[in-house]
View 1 (cartoon, one colour):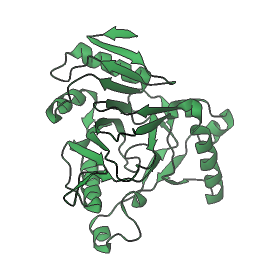
View 2 (cartoon, one colour):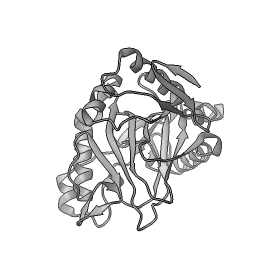
View 3 (cartoon, one colour):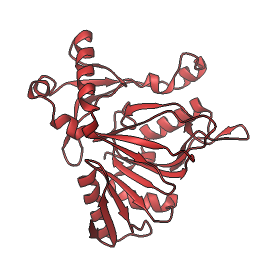
Length: 289
């Protein structure tokens, strides 16, 4: 355990991640901001506990120290507007909900009950989202969890031959499948035109320069290689990445406020059992500058 600037940092039960207690979001001093940034750099995932739920304004003030607020970028605004239109919910402001709750016929948030595969948030957008944020607001009695995977470790343990082979390659990330299904209204498709994004297979973090393996099931192909080789390489990369030594499963408690490095960590969840209520509050996060 370590104590810094009035908050405590305790490592979680995994190869990465830490619990923080005593953090304040109300006009924190610069020393606390710097200490929190160091904790994020070291642990990649920080789960804050024991604090009062921060307001949207407090979160804006706090996370503006870490880069441009995601919801203030044109790319993210277009993303949230389209996601809201597709899901039939109100376009979010700084705060939105990942929820399966429907009240009086109105959806509270995005994603419903379906399982979500491994992914980086907004991987299909050219501008990287560097920090992601979720807060547990309502949890089923049976519990619920999110799994995180360390893609820095995945990159750093790849065989040298594969790292050399893919050193300068770009991956094509599918945007269409994020928003549109076969039964999506054609008028909605026509109104919102989306393009795929390209990112390095080995993505450096824009601040630290540390490289992460930046591929997932949302990648269509690796540019510059044949389709057959691309498929084999992607299968090999993901088989290597999603091994137990690189994964931490976080079991949510109400009030948990999780912040993570969205370049170096991917996350996923299992399907939510029907007739249960699960709501996580999300702040838009931070984008690269």
